[in-house]
Image (cartoon, rainbow, N blue to C red; front, side, top):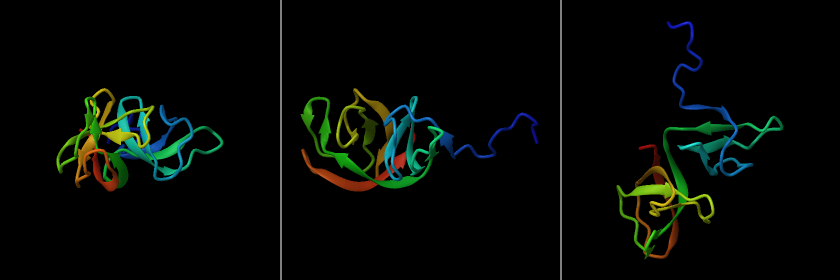
Length: 117
């Protein structure tokens, strides 16, 4: 084993999230350009334990950069810091993952989201 290995798998660890500044457990988060989901709310040290792989039920809005747009299974999803919910098809955001469910145009729904690219 390499003596410089920090984490064996690197799929979950404590980080200072880029957005949101103080995530709660279950929140989608951004760590630089890397998408994740907070497993444990941010601690007093400013770090939150984040999963960087997996499939999570997350709130997704049926919009893209041009306006209302339904989400289909397999669509690429993006994280937009200023939006609520943060996840949609707006490619002006940070790439987040893939839809594993559907959302109607202009609707918001909780669907499984596959993290990563």
